Length: 270
Ligand SMILES: [Zn+2]
Ligand SMILES: [Zn+2]
Image (cartoon, rainbow, N blue to C red; front, top):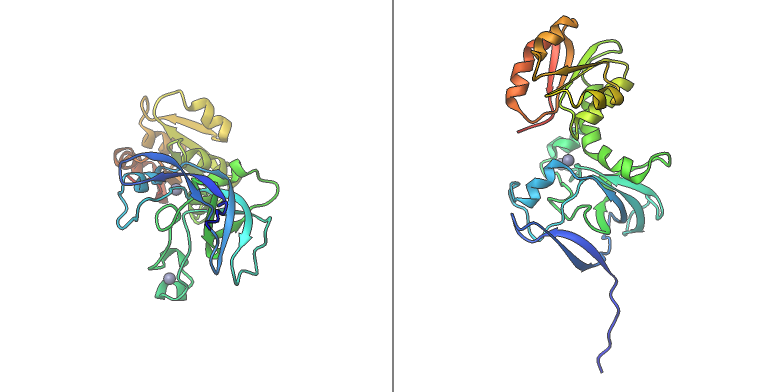
């Protein structure tokens, strides 16, 4: 006698092979293994780096693969051995998807450079699904004050700009320029403003001026109509230039905008 057991399923947006585009399919809801939790995904940011999975630019990806590394949600199941995280807790998962804890870099506390670093959406299925399983090393607690849709982009784009600026050596009052007002830049301007810097936002054309000011830029420099490096020198020279626009030409042209001992930080790659 055959018995049918109802299997709980969910919707996922997967890439079946490089270049094939997204495909919405039903999959069985996964169970978290030891040291893992299952997250009910509430929001997942869209990052340019998703293209690595979509087009197969990252070596060694096993398909089908579900992209997404800006995940915000609620833990709905914990695997064996998980004691620090509870069901119902709000968590996020970003680019750092877990480390082995044993390699030389890990033993030095430099988990970011783990030789077996895992990346959600590349090493294992990411946030473009209703339920996602992640190792506890990848989890970040989300405060109650932050909504899921607001928190999600902070897990990758936010960390990229926040960490760059807070380690930049700039102090409140210093001139900090943010090149580009896209996914990274619009967050970089807001963080720079909150850090108390004098913020110069740089982009092409005048149409971004109002947005840049609204995000907290003190000055907007239109690099199409002005020499942006000269404009920064007129303001005293930048202590830090945070280059988020993925254009090596735009970056090169801006280097002369640095003041003495200035620092040029490249976070948008092309
Ligand atoms: Zn990203
Ligand atoms: Zn390691």
